[in-house]
Image (cartoon, rainbow, N blue to C red):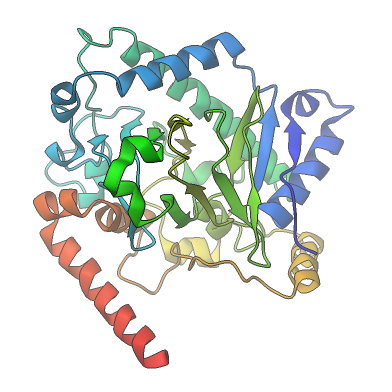
Length: 369
């Protein structure tokens, strides 16, 4: 039977040699059978989490003209502000407003691969309107980056690999990303909210008190993932599934929006651990992170066999054989697909290539139907 709830793991157990085996066993279950988990006792105080939440909410209250000064389409990095309903996921418009940030990098040189454009300085709101925003989120991204690298070493141990097995896929100055997202309620959306209930569509890859995040189990059922105070929600991404060649599962998830009129907006601050854009699919598929022991692979096969295979909705996109040879190229294409306004301005050739792929896929689906 596929999972019906999301497990809660205590990171403090990993700090004690006496309880670390218990933690690694629970983590292996989450990696192979769920692809999602709650993580508590991560070493960040409730007070700092609250400061992050308050600064994130405050961003959406600044004047529109201040937000538009840092609009995403102003730069080729896909960092910056996105207006309400500007992003597309699973072919439909997302009813959300957001700002994308990352750990900062200098502007790449003229001879760098084009996907290095994703490594760039942030577009920050003016300190005159939000004086604490930049220092708070710079610190938060740095601290979350350190937690994510440590947690990745525990993932390696949970599937019986050396703790440093993933290190070769992290850059010395690895980029990590963060979004601050507002999902308006029906009353705030007005007529825009009548076209669907998608906050962010089904996809693979700190919340408000509203329910909205759902995770799809391997039988195709949607399972609620409500916020739990004092925890982080951890989603296993497609990059990790690729690196482990399917041992760790990337689970489809979505955010339902809008909330009923009068319920108030939902807010979310997802953090995305980075992987080196230079990693090549040929290496991922032939080498990955090394030889996961046969007994561990057998456990994953047992999970799939028990539920009759996967019936979730989203195609796995991090694989070779397509238009991209590296993770960086694939990531850039995905960004263009999600933000066609940025693609039209900075990457018109890539946008046309993505649209041609979509036309062919639609034609093939029509023939099959």
